[in-house]
Length: 303
Image (cartoon, rainbow, N blue to C red; front, side, top):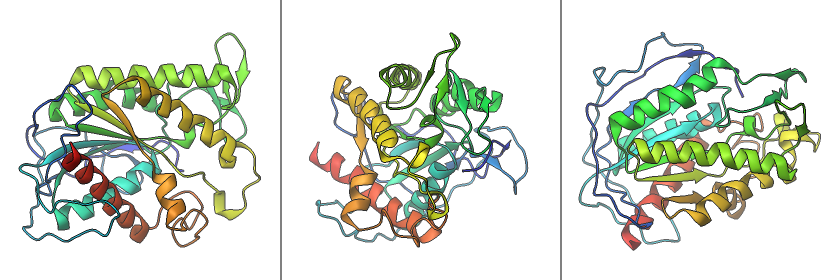
């Protein structure tokens, strides 16, 4: 995971593309014409610019390919699915893999609004897994959640916000009352759930039709994990349970089980898939992108 950095825009499509809203969990996921909006934050190798719907880069190809999957996946739907992808550096890499797949296979209009080193939780001080020190949530991370992501959602009016659960949220927290908690503690789960629910509600109110939580596999930093902290399956599973519970009570929310898919494919402990134990390789990110695309299209087809 990288620490927060500068905000940059790699490309934006113009105007929102929306399918019809549905009151139930009928994922309005259509064929992406391969238009990609990237509002990624925290990169060290790009220029700093503010996200703007006037900066436009659009690509489109007519070719389609069939994605191997256990579910029937339509080659084309009637119109593109608009997706906004949010998360940290791991999410950004996955989103960029999805963007490449969308550019070659179609079916998604994608806006990427990620920020390196930032989770989706804004309350409490976190125990930084790198420094071992208590630190407030960085101002840039709060700005990402409170201003940048809602702005992108308001501009795009997406069918889906795809939110990748972040390991930055799977760390010990110290609250304003001085109480400390780990992700397996009921207090931590309650407050994580409140933060996530508040974020989802805001994005839905701002213009998203649905929020889909993408479950992150347990990290294993450089494959030398201690079995404690973020690389503890119990901590990660506790955070997954939080988003599963949110999806259970709101028909406008759901979960994509990336962890389960990786387990089925034998990839959870594959070093080539995540060379540093955390971030996906470019090839693996494209594989994950193909799986995400197939899942979204299959859900749409099934109604």
